[in-house]
Amino acid sequence: MKMKVVSLFCGCGGMDLGLLGGFDFLGRYYHKLPYEIVKAVDNDMYCTRIYNDNFDTKCDVADVRVLDTVSLPDFDLLIGGFPCQSFSISAQNPPRLGYKDERGKLFFEMVRILKEKQPKAFIAENVKGLLSANKGMAFPMIVKEFENAGYHIAYKLLSSYDYGVPQKRERVLIVGFRDKEQFENFEFPKSAKTKHILKEVLDLAADNEEKWYFSDKAVEGMMNVREKMNKGRIQDPELPCNTISSHLAKVSLNSTDPVLFVNGRYRRLTPKEAARIQSFPDTFKISSVSEARQYKAIGNAVPPVMMWYIANSVANALKCQ
Image (cartoon, rainbow, N blue to C red; front, side, top):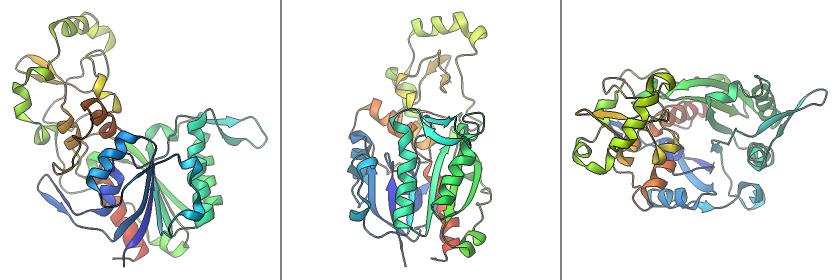
């Protein structure tokens, strides 16, 4: 029996693809998992366009804050990577979790839906910085909010490289179960036996396309400050790539984004390479939006292969496979 899933902040679908399975990446087939997506929501129309090119269930362009839980279909699992930049700790006694701007409300919307719909479980993903936000005070309060919604909580800082992704990308995974026995059955997945490096996903054809290379002027500007500013982050193809971000469309040699050094010249990663670094299969369609939008969508995504391992462990705990 398939578990029904609601996906919030789904972006272009990294979490969703990993959750569903049924795709190939670097010579391995990640089998289908016992889930079906019954609702997907994101407020970015360009990410949504990519999502809808790749999934049977179509994503709604909508603000989660106006999502009516009554109208949601019944579901068993809630997933999402909520924005974390906006949390604050209000100076009450005891201190309480608050928000600095509108984005900070989005976490509370996830909690609201959990409280009102009470699905069997949820999976939330976030950046490593969530653990240290507000001098380490925010994260325990976030966990408490999830517990107050009626869930037993497990969390762990994971590196995508440990799960067959050719990228060093650390993310916090928070998993919650309503049933205590299912919670006790859950274990975060062990590291994959096979690790992958950057060289395996590079597009050699791009080495012959001038558009991907930095200009002489850009290189000269970077070299003037390279030692002082630690810029020009050349990637060793024999190692996993450093974390890619949504800024790749605007990458410069004076940023901390990864760049390549090919035949004595600096070149940027292509959108196709960025997608592969994130562990999207080549069958995943991204070309319906501009290259700048492709970079942003891919850079913000959860690596599908890492998500597959998490979703598989959750399915085992729920005993639905």
